[in-house]
Image (cartoon, rainbow, N blue to C red; front, side):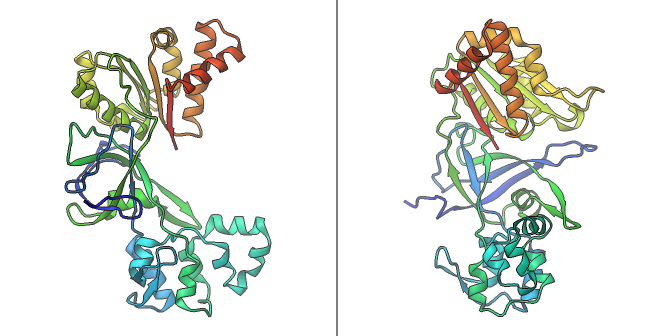
Length: 369
């Protein structure tokens, strides 16, 4: 039996790709279904799928033209020692965004950047490997040496949005595309662009493997209640959690806090969540930040329901936070601290200890990025 892992990913293919934002949204967020039949991959809600994307063909062709190569030349991958055509190596095995210091040292005109850390940082913020290889004379070194200075392609991780009890031979993902400007050029997020724009349904091989998350799990006790906080694509694992809890016939209560920009355009899996709400299986609170003059985020709704949140905590509920690490997770954790302090009549230090204990007991769990 073949075991698929990071070093031997499964050649998955796309079964479905559906845009979830309605016309008028400023976002492009897709529901994807990957075919895992014959992989014997077993996953659980809370886990992720690791995917190795491919670089856009136009960028690969641009580099080949700059190097005056056909792409058929053979090179040895410096990490795996496997032999590939240059085109395949650039397409699937190379990070064409990052410029390594050893690569920079091959360009005499840029020598000062190797010595001046601040100047180098400024240069790297506005240039990628394609810029370097197309704008500078090709270094006088062998092709094999040149490729040895290229960073490897790293996997991108996506939270699983389905329960395997519900979809035994496939896995669902929730992926948002993004664009950004660098050095005067529009660029795309590599993984999301590959999955949402490049990959052809039923045709493109998507090297995939199971990436378990040992802590961000549905409680074994079906009577335990869940508070799930996940704005944007952070809602993905909770779709899996709720599918699982439905299959388990779990008696514990479920409460979801979801947030996005506008309800009319950006309510992912709206039918699924509202049907569960109407059935009494889910308590649902949504913060759509642009639907009113004053922006409302999930932490504001959590604070609004402080009394009920505290009651659920006292009742042994598990709290899950998934999504943005820089702002959302910090703001939500700070709000929970304030609720614990206020409703529990605790000092600041006692509230910190309470939150710390919840994390130690795996009753407060984060999956942030």
